[in-house]
Length: 267
Image 1: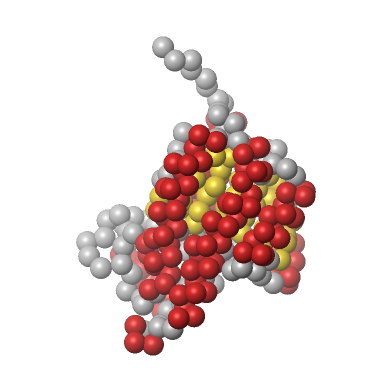
Image 2 (image 1 turned 60 degrees about the vertical axis):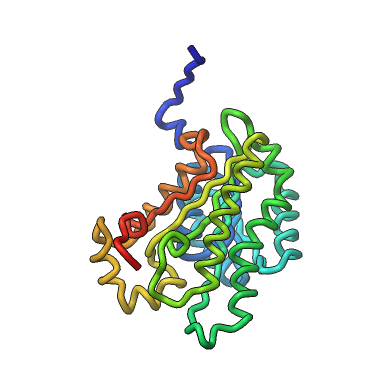
């Protein structure tokens, strides 16, 4: 019989001593995740494009734990490398990388521009890959067989079912991110790094503000759980994926959407 090791409930979700980077962590889903990781005991770096957003978010999140904010435009490889260098200058180990920074572009098919592909794919799909590349030494150093380092990619249910809005590049970029998650999981698993993705449904955020203002009540009414996502829903899945509770989980895409995508009866 294999050796059995039992971890106490409190230790199972404890992130004390862990070091995390959450991109796009100054608002919306990224801030929900950063708050959850901080409350579980992790030391967290958040990033955003603007210095003001970083300053404000760091002030708000500081009540929950040790947080630092670094402005970075992650739509370029050079900025991804610069952020990675700053993170690794602070510590040669990175336990948790959350690739959350993202962009959406809604426009009808007839007028959908090249820019809507380039900017969205750069941030939503290329940036997570560039950051994994740049931070791989720190992730490898942090990972162990019993407690791997974690990469958590933030995808979308738009990559699982077809949304009604014309978000061609966004849905495609998130579908690509889901598959990149699986590819990296297979390669990095033997190096003690897990790679999983969260596919959020409708959560209050700047990206979803227009949609939720217009049809938020209808969306909630159609969800099996009859509500929109809340801060704790996203914080909870992030803590689970970052903790020992998920140490044997990799290559998964987890919808956190109240059942919307997995129970959809049509488009």
